Length: 188
Length: 188
DNA sequence: TGTAAAGTGTACAGATCAGTACATAATGGA
DNA sequence: TCCATTATGTACTGATCTGTACACTTTACA
Image (cartoon, rainbow over all chains, first blue to last red):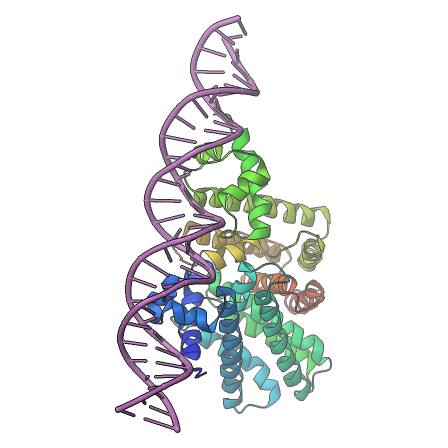
């Protein structure tokens, strides 16, 4: 099977689900916007849920790639990289298409903990936490696990604030907080 | 109009929407679980969206009442009250019915910024922020606005972590962070 | 160029959605 | 007890939902 159409579908469905929501997006809407026939969609994915899951997997991959690539590109030492997390976050928030975190939204729409979309969303966050922890350790944090968890909670809070619009500069606020944590945990 | 049935409907619909989601809950499901007839529902609310909005208003009221009542009951001085925010949060997380923040989920399902449910959700967070700021000022924070925004972002991050389950002790982690912020802003 | 795989378009099934019509029953106050 | 208000039950409309059937067309490759 040539997987090109399948990938094209996942790639094109992502921004639609992201923008409109999972339940609110019907298969007919996907047909209209992707230009891919419904027959083909159901040939590649047995159900809508399977497509959603593939979209989430794709999102996990591309988001983490984008994020940590950006972080690497700063070429900063690990300690400064931890603070730079929130600069990259700010870049994301300022994208015109920014609509919050797709995984927070997925776990809002698929609340059953047994639903694979929920599991996939939690897994995404765990992968971020692991990556954060590794940077914390490289930076010489006294308690890398604690610091990573604090930074991740800050990141999630900033995303919620940015999405709901109740704070005009969530990334800057979170960064200011992070810098205090980092200063307290890492000797100069 | 005796508003008893209306209130009963709002009160009974809340946990259903909270547990199942807004789109995923049909009016027929509400009839089945509340025991209130569909005719009556549509006599009190012209549309499902109007019912959802009433539910969100009710949630805003009861949640803030519950939260700040709890905070008052600690009878702590303002500075300690700021840290106690996260103890109360932990109580909430440990409730068996805890399923995340209803407003984060509402803004996930109704993403259009013009949708009243989205506006209502943002308003809830702003009201929390205002209340936090007032306690920060009472506690003698150097920058009450900054501290309140930091604490709110921590709170939202902890809620997301608790809901998605990627951190086993989100309230404790957020509290440890908050205590550093408070110590840095408030002289003993 | 021939052939099998992959994709398309349309039409449909069956379920479920929000919301309505209408006749009947319960309720509460004077 | 009378009467207006309020609530109920059922059956319905028309739209939309996921998913399927099927005949047709395009594509890739040997």
